[in-house]
Length: 159
Image (cartoon, rainbow, N blue to C red):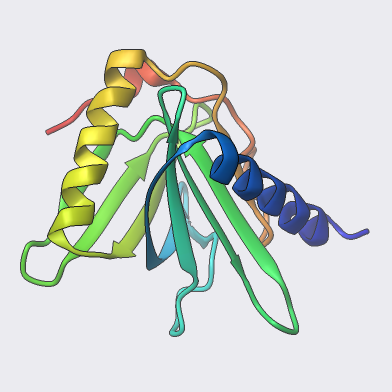
């Protein structure tokens, strides 16, 4: 099996686990990019954007997405968010994560004020619990640098 197929199966497995044992926060169309020395897409960035499913579990935010009929792909991030920004006019929500290995992962969601407020509350809960467990970052669109890293919860701060 190819690496991208393994990422799809791993992400689907985590999604099913989340449905059973995590707190569901919402779903929105969105995209994810890794910003390091260069920007690297972790999901499709053109319409139609994939649906991103958001969960809270053990002090971490987990976002999963699976897409494609012919060429399947998947994305998973499970970390303490560093920042959440909301454009109140457009409803666009940006969640920033900082993997321990450096760079930043920015997940952009096309949501609404209710989802944004839920995510802010969940991020505060993450900060209180200090993200028990290790973070994860998987993408079938390739692995820039070493993306499968634990979360550095000390970097977390909220505006």
